[in-house]
Image (cartoon, rainbow, N blue to C red; front, side, top):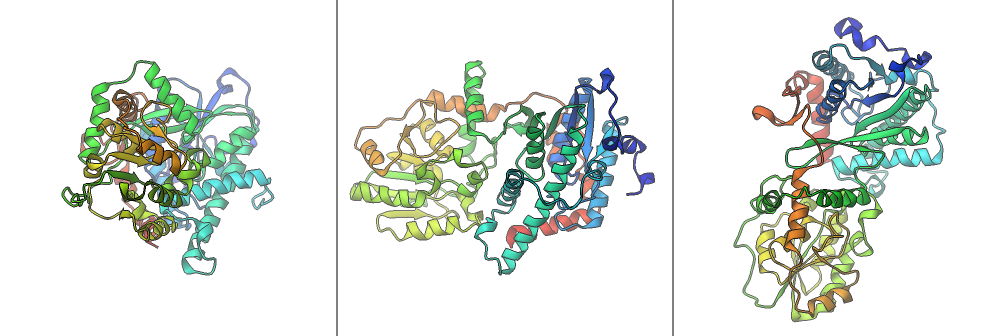
Length: 497
C-alpha cells in the first residue's frame, strides 16, 4: 500500500506491537475495535460503534488488516486489486468519520510472530475451524465434510476452507500478540461467528481479556453490544427475552405488528420467505383434522451449536415418520418444508424431502411449492414445529402449537412440549386450546424492538441501501472499483456452485 494515497494518521501507530506501551492514564483501559473488510456490510455497523465510542470519550484503538495474509470473507481468493480497494475505502471512510483516529495494523502485530506457525494447540485449531465451517454454512449453505474430496465442488470448497483457516490463524496470532502488551482492556468485533471473529473471541478468552460482540437487531436494525457472551447462545437469548419482559418493555401493538407483517410477507426483524406462496392452492376437500408440521432450515441452526437442538429436531425426518405412523388415518399429516430449505446445499433438505415423500400418510409441501403457510395454519387443528417462528405465530393466530425443538421463547406459555411421537399422539387426543396469546405478543415485541440504542448507525436512511454511519453510506465507494465486482462475482459463483 502506498502511504501517499492514504491518510497519514492511519500509520502513526504502525509499529505499536513492537513498542513497549506507555503506562500513563491515557493508555490504560483502552478498547480495541476490529474493523471488518470495508467491502462488507458489517463495515458500516462496526464503524458506527467506533464513532459512538469516540463520542463517549472512550480511549480506543482501531484494528485493521492491510492484507499481509489474505483470505477474509470479502476476498478469499486473494485478488490484490480487491485488497487495495478495500484499504482505500477504509482509509477514506475513517478520514471522513474520525479524522484524528489512531489505528493498529494487524500486519504489524503479525510480523512479530512466526508467520508459518501451524502448530497451534488442538483446542485453538478446533475453535478456528468451527468459525470457518460456520462461515461456509452461513454464506454458501455447504457442509464441506459432506463433499467428495475428489469432486470439483469438493476441491473448491476445501480450497475456500483452507484460505479462511489461514486468515483466521493470522488474525488469532496477531491479536494474541497485541494483547500481550497489557494495555487493552476490551476488544470488540462484529458478530463473533464469521471468519475471522471466532479467532478474535478465542484469543481474548485465552488472554482473559473482556470482549464485546457488535450486532444489530429488531425491525430498525439497532446496534447493540453483548459483553463476554456469544450472541448466538440460546441461554443468552432466553435470558435477554426474560429481562425484556420483566423490565416492562413489551409493546403490545409492536408485538401484534410482528405477526401481521409476517403474514403479509413483509420484512420484520428478518426477511420474509413467503413471496412465492399464494392462497387457494391448499387442498381442503378432505375434512379430517389437519396436523400441520413445519420444518426448520436446520443447516442455519447447525452453525449455532447443539444447544439449539433436541433429539427430535436434530434429525426431524425420522421423527415425522414416527408421528405419521402414530396418529394413523385419524389426521391429515401435512408437512410444510421451510421455504429457505430450497437453498440448503448440504444435502440434508433433499434427503428429508425424499424420505418424507415416500410415506403414504404424509402430504408433503416442498420448499418452493406455492401452498400458503398461513392458509395451512388457519386450516390446522394443531401446528407442530421444531423451533421456527411458525410455532410462535400459530399461538398468536389461535392455534394449539406443539414444540418439538428449542426456541428462544420456549420457556414462555406459548407451546405444548413434546419429545416423542407418543407424546404428540397423546396431546392430539386431548381437546387442546391455544396457549397464551399475550406471551406470543411479548415474544413478537422482543423481536421487533431490538436490543440496542439509537446511535450513529442507521438503517436505510433517506432511501439509501443498507446501513449508514451518521447518515453516510459508503456503498457507492465500495462499488467504484473492478476489484469489488470481482469479489461479488466470485461470491455469486460460490453460492450457485
